[in-house]
Picture 1 (cartoon, chains in turn orange, green):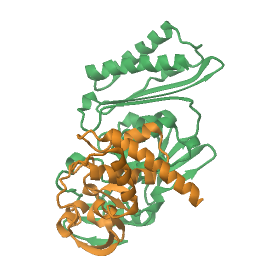
Picture 2 (spheres, each protein chain N blue to C red; picture 1 turned 45 degrees about the vertical axis):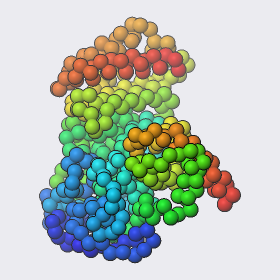
Picture 3 (cartoon, rainbow over the protein chains, first blue to last red; picture 1 turned 90 degrees about the vertical axis):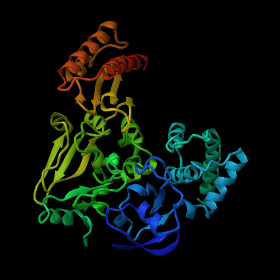
Picture 4 (cartoon, rainbow over the protein chains, first blue to last red; picture 1 turned 180 degrees about the horizontal axis):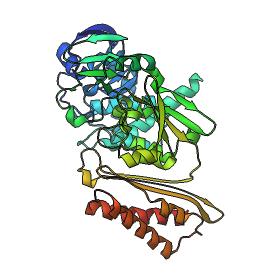
Length: 160
Length: 285
């Protein structure tokens, strides 16, 4: 089967079987996710992408469900102003880049606060623990994330 | 309607309920495919879609939230994260906690309410909260519609649709429960006999326990709820005395012994511990 979709802002056509996951097809048909090793259970965060603005694990999304929809991958997100802002805040807090989890964490946390702009402390900590991390960067991520939430709140207040 | 994605699985993607039910006629053995997150251990390597599947990802009718005077209706195809956007006065905090305890943000965007409740072989993490809240479940087919209560579902041990049927709605009555407790032990990686969920709701009035509900969910054994215990506690003066606490533990012991599949030593210990903890919390409030 062939499907049309918008991938990181560009119209593309992907080909694959109906029971193939979006992750497998993107890895085979595009330059994306080339180094990602995914748990295939939706828990590791390495295959997460935005499907119509909602974070989903692409390893559990059948190819046919992506038809006529908009997808933003972590690679696409890396070129956005939101990513640059979050990354600069994390750099200021002293984040040491981890090849295993940093990209997945930044993508996940940004998607989370776009969906839930005013999380409680408990919810924020839960969101931080949702992507497995062994590098110990969670305290830095939490500080950066709290600053990002404040900045976005101010931005929303100015717009209104 | 999109037909004919023919190899290796035949997947239908209806756009509304009428089309969905129409598809079951010529395809009585078609399986429902909702979020696709229910059995991740089976998905390792490939998605393993059933030979004929009806995918519900385009059916907007199943994603509606309707507010009534005394209840809220949640569409069974509602992604779990969308439940968190239900108005606060209609969303019991224990239900919110149960939803947040499932997977991660991405999985909750994919997984659906109906999918969580209708998993093969067990009832899902949200069910015990809905049981305590007195929820009802609507099952519809092309010509029929029926409601079943959470109590009926727990007796059956699962929520199962008949051939050609689909769970379409979950109706949750609105009732105030100022005190709420939710505790989940274990996740999908934990062995069955080490998993447990506890939900308790209570209301006090003029120093008396006005209402009290307590439920335990053991995925391998089902629901543990003792209505005699709940009835006995109504009207009890606060703080509860040692006699009332001992009586509660006695009730729970008997209920555990009455389960068809006995709880493990670990579960038994946690159930008694959590019962004591909940009663202590009610004392403090």
